[in-house]
Length: 275
Ligand SMILES: [Zn+2]
Image 1 (spheres, rainbow, N blue to C red):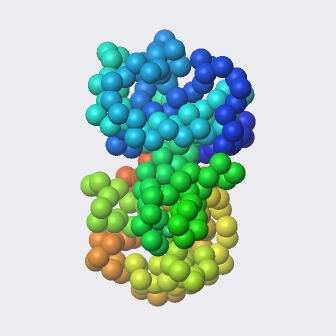
Image 2 (image 1 turned 120 degrees about the vertical axis):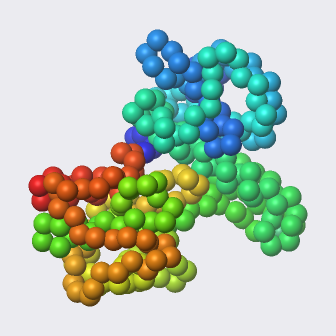
């Protein structure tokens, strides 16, 4: 799971703790700057920073993790010293400390939001960061932009001891997952689930139960997972988003999504209870 750790305290006010103890979450093109240390993958040490040639396009103070200040930085055209490289967060799963990975997801989301809200969406005036809350505001018309979140419902559908898994056109070969979709304006989560299931695979569901949620900063989703029971209808892929769908038994599962994902957690929960 990609989770903001409990010992992270968000803040806009810089900690008086020395800069040398800070964590630096440095990104280029959505990838995090890391280096290989004695204990595995590490963030670059504060004493290494700034040692990289390249332009800083964004710098945000995030708060503290275990009392240490956290900074988010976006670079462009960085020239890295030997031993350092940029890596995607999904590839760092189980290799970088889980708390650091959680804060990195937060940092990535805020950087992307900050960089894409430089101008007012209503009147086009350059916006300013506010110092009383995480927001950017327009001095001309007063519009305030907050970090953006896109709610996504994810639903596992069970039928006796089988699970419905579908193959989206964009998935790597052989991979199947539970269904998911963006919540549309005006919908409840429940309505979004019924609509997505009907649209994508043509069946009806009942007995919706909330399972868990997870931030998915690629680029700004909030995944909200549910379990539902099959209620009727004939299975058919919509042939647009979904190219194949079927019922699977726990001992016969196809290729599954990334271990860090909520989808994987839903499927593992099914195996645990049905297997
Ligand atoms: Zn404006």
